[in-house]
Length: 83
Image 1 (cartoon, rainbow, N blue to C red):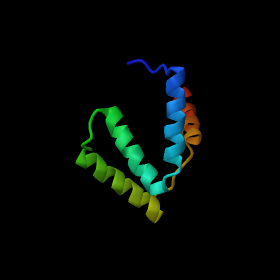
Image 2: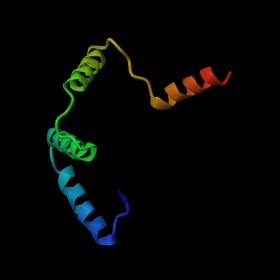
Image 3: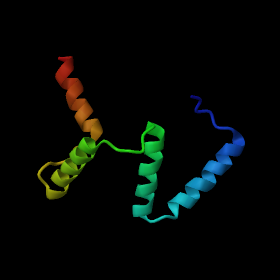
Image 4: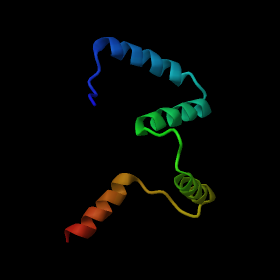
């Protein structure tokens, strides 16, 4: 599958993006989910994965776990496995 974008397509994509950015955050999230599902090839999410995502989000929201920046985690892993 080619990811090259033709000049006319760029203008269309820019218009679509501008329209999408005028949506509410909730509408943008719903649109993003639908678009991602179309890229993955399945519009039926795996129920087990959805449950895992909800569980993890609840842990973050409740403060049970604390998020760390990706670059910090990667630096720690590199240091751990380099020596």
